[in-house]
Image 1 (tube, rainbow over the protein chains, first blue to last red):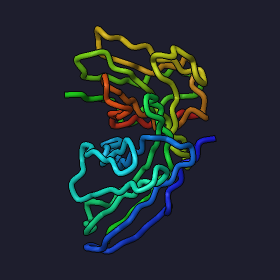
Image 2 (image 1 turned 45 degrees about the horizontal axis):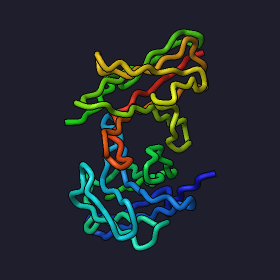
Image 3 (image 1 turned 180 degrees about the vertical axis):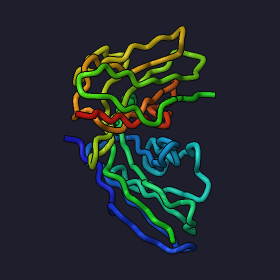
Image 4 (image 1 turned 90 degrees about the horizontal axis):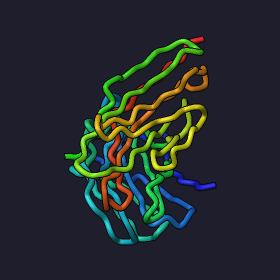
Length: 112
Length: 110
C-alpha cells in the first residue's frame, strides 16, 4: 500500500514566520507534487519535482519554495507566511511515466 | 491554455437517482482524463481514468472529444457516494503533471 505522509495535520503560524511542510513517500516514486486546495478553486499546483534536487514551478509558486534532497522527501517552504497562504496543502507522488498520483492526508495551515 | 472546468460546485440528489457530474476541458491535443474522489476525512484518491474504460463503484465516464467533455455518471446514486469529486487532465508529454478542475461536491440524500 502506497503511503504518503505529511508532517502535520494542522498548523497555526503567525504572519512573517518561516514555515516548513514535510512530505514523505515510501514507494520509491520519482515524481512529487505540492498543491493547495481551496474551496471553489480546486487543486492548484505549487511546485513539483521529477527527481532529487530537481524542481519545477507549478501554477502558483509565488511565496513558496521547495527542497528535495532525498528521493522520498519533498519539503514545501513558506519563507514569510502571509494570511493569504491559509489553506489546505496536499502532497502527492507518482512513478515516472505513470500519471496516477497518490495523495497525503493534507496539512491545514492557518496563518494569523 | 489547458483548463478543466467543473461547472457545478454542489450537486444534490436523492438516493437511487441518476447522477452526472460534468467536466469540460480545454486542450488542443489528446489528453488523458481522470476523476479523483475525496470522501469525508479521507485522502484524495483516483476513481477512474478514461483509458482504462472501467466502471468503478458503479461510476463510468466517457471521453467525448467532440464536446471536450468527460462527464462522470452513475445510474443509481448511493449515500456512500457523497464526496468531493475532481476532474483532472494530463496533457501530452507533461511527465505526470495534472491539471485539476474546481471540484464538485456530491450530496446524496436518503
